[in-house]
Image (cartoon, rainbow, N blue to C red; front, side, top):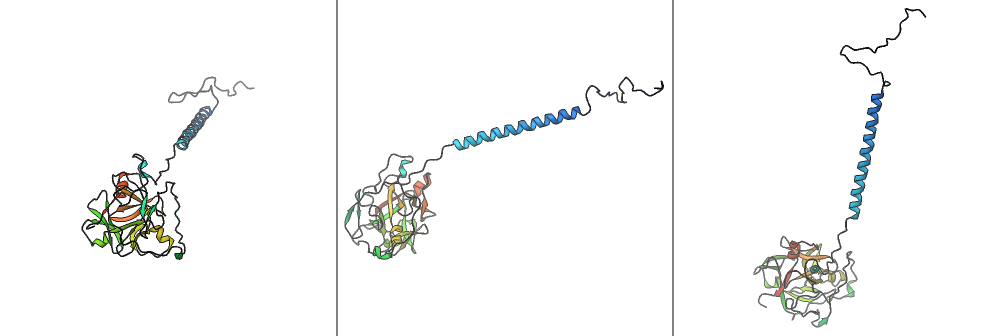
Length: 276
């Protein structure tokens, strides 16, 4: 080989800014280290996210399910064990007795079984229970709201509203409390002209008995204990879990709620009608 052949310089080159390349590592090692560190960081982040989401899922699945509210005895929620019968002296009936549409008395105790949550709306043939007028000699009652004691049920153009005491005709605010048309242990409200109060489309209204099973159920309400002294809550016999309550001074059926406003809006006192 000729002596003047070019040979690699034994010293590493020095750039103008004074930087000397590191020849102790193979080219690209820095990039490999950065890529590896990024991959490790990504894996750690994914593993952490999976662990956290797993713990949250376990916490949700372990959370207790709210217990079912026994709407047949709503007073048990935050008050002492209530009675299943209407308060004596307010409805004009002794506990365990109700007045039948025929004028007699039947001994019956309200059912304490858990209510059904899927009401039936099928009507039976009307011939199964012929229409019968309410007894004319039964005492007349008025129904007043607990949280609006100066207002009472008032039939206005077929609808039942909560209007001030003293408004309207006596025949529109006085009702005969009789044994329930569909359940003798419950109640039905008969008007002075022989009609009944029934719910339709979840609104309380006055209607004439057509003799059908659907009408009898719609016009029957079971008294339940109220947290308010001397008052009752009225549960629909064919829509268990729905109670009569006033809202915007209109009487309607609403699902039971545990808040104080609902308990007040759905509690009523049955008193002697004016002039009785």
